[in-house]
Image (tube, rainbow, N blue to C red; front, side, top):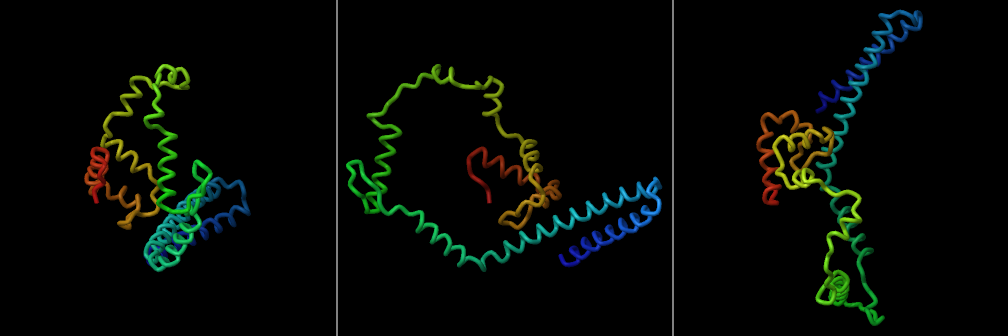
Length: 206
């Protein structure tokens, strides 16, 4: 990694020097077409070199965060405990304006309230689909409906995967989307099978 970082930084430095030299020459003759073309090329090379260096630095920072994340676990769990304490409900008002303090009674009251609100033997409605249809701003065509229930194809999986930015944070295995794109001829079949398996039975392979 150090060698790679050094190479990329050196590329950026050299590109800057080439551009600076070209611009110095242009200062004496702003109409030299060869120098103008060379300046344009130097700018492109510099932008690409900077982009590569930034991408490497972002990946390195993310990997470092994953590596050292466990060292911050106490701080993390302390924050979680504090958040839970501030978000916990200690008391609510019941239907007859009495205060409920017991945690089990609070849970039971929430369940009772939403059962009453959302349905039950006293809240049964007949749904008129035509009434809803008249209020819809868009009704799916038969083709759109078929598309929603159609099976996911292998090409769709690949297209979605390759739509992920290469420098997105790596997963638990430590590999970023950029790695999988480069190694797709080798691992693409297994990755696609795992994703299709998830859509088939809701179970994600590990």
